[in-house]
Length: 195
Image (cartoon, rainbow, N blue to C red; front, side):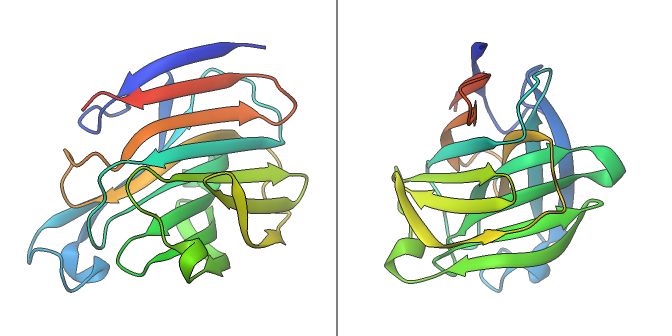
């Protein structure tokens, strides 16, 4: 078992030598929401942990920092850079007050697997969001309690845990801390935002 710690900020790319960029694109604000500043560029970034040998069953956890309307923050599991970037993504969409689990392949959105609304799907600054994958089962957690019904999906069988965000302002602290863990108690990375 290997445990490492790291600090990160959103200006670095990749965040540090412990991270690998899986996907990073700019989107015009009109694509992301009417409340975004006209003509601004929103940045979508996904990172996976580098240089680790995580088992296929794994979990990724973040603590929400400061998040503003129409930005989002989330975790990825089984992330790989192969074919342009593939991963399972679980994120909190602040503008819609919901938690969403998605499947991405080849660097593009492929399918929404679960949408969690109402009180379970609403997070505040300081709340924890976690995604576990065991076999073909994916399950989201808010502050340690399971939310939604959970889903099964078999397209991705290996990869690394990581995190992602959509930010109109690269200096906004969307994620205050991250943890990626082997479900069988193997490798662990704990990271804190340095901003």
